[in-house]
Length: 143
Image: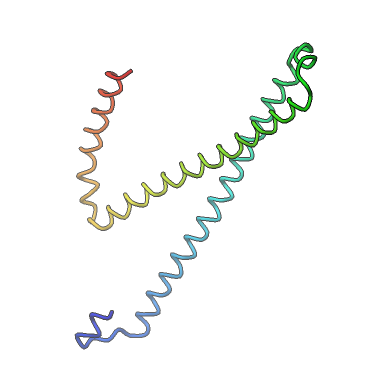
């Protein structure tokens, strides 16, 4: 718009307003996606934490009586709580990093595809096939 104004073609206020409306809509969509991502991550983390807690609790309660005779109750509780804290923090961080990576890659691919008018997608198909074949060969030789 500045370039157009410098050349004697001022932008109308309606055109400026339409750009602002698009920007506002994209910003609101970004906020909504961030909130939805947070809620989904919290639900996934809660389900995983409850599942792991139940599994660990079942194992501890299923231990033989001799285990409880030689292990102080405080040590069991401390170990249990520290393990659960570590698991909860690790799961949350891992899921968050995975989601960030997936959405960043997807957003980058969409942005590049839009910027190149789809030419990138045409070039990407054979590259993906070559990458897949190299990956299979590499995995076979290294495992």
